[in-house]
Length: 123
Image (tube, rainbow, N blue to C red; front, side, top):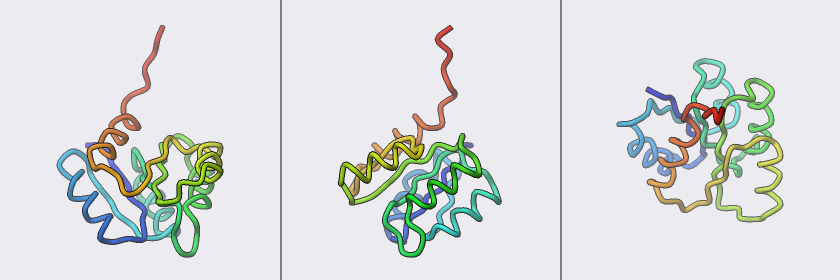
């Protein structure tokens, strides 16, 4: 079973997403950047959903740290912030995709599936 790590400081939101995905994925939830780094060090996830706006370390800071630890982990940024510059910076720093809040849970599941599918070879 593929592993999903959800990093968001809103416990109610993370619980809804965890419950929605738990039949198809092994889901871990943490509520801060430092906890995200510990979770990745403990057991590598197949995809990370990472909130941009969190107290303490921002999602962008955590994204940069994750890229240094393991650049192969797809990271999908999640936020209510729709500023184009913020989205562009996340993508420049290696984010796999961006999902705005509020979001459709089916879309979140679709993004998890895309991020965890094996790389295709067109040869």
